[in-house]
Image (cartoon, rainbow, N blue to C red; front, side):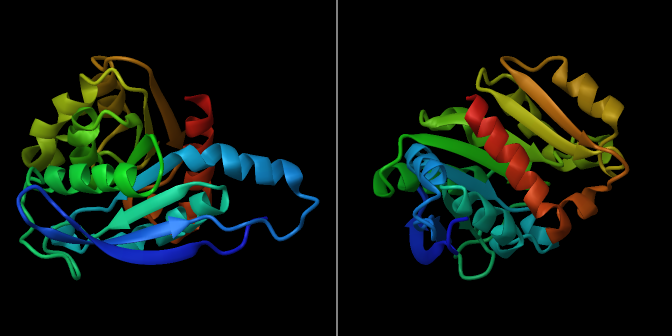
Length: 236
């Protein structure tokens, strides 16, 4: 197994001048030289960066909620970026209610990753309200080659806030994976399936039986999210 990842931080500036507190997770070498196959895997995965987009800022969403997933993916050889969207933590600016200003945040971090981490492929992952925001950025950066949502809020109530984001990810031809608990309080399985009927390109779902929206976001499911995300990357 790989060592604990190297963790650094930096500031990424958006196109409208907001400064985002960003964390970089970089994989380290494997401890046992005999684990040569795993060493080859870490090398193969080094062309990727996974960008994780945190849940709704206004309800306390922040990058630290994604630390477990970021560390797990880094142990598998992926470079990972997490960041606090505008108005969260040490990031400047103010959060928006509908998440449209935050699309600039996602785009800026993705572009920074390509320019500074020697990668040419991005997997974009959004959690909860971070999923619609990330989905609206998918086609704005050429190097984004796939998208994963964890608990995308497609339901009627959440659509009041995030409904205008839906079409952006659904019309994208890029491969998409939607992970959701079957007891998600914001989106029913029927609502998810109905939305995905209109989705372009390759679409996959992972439904976790009996799990609610906030339970899926908890650290207890980080390792499972890492497995799903890594398997999806390997299929691209």
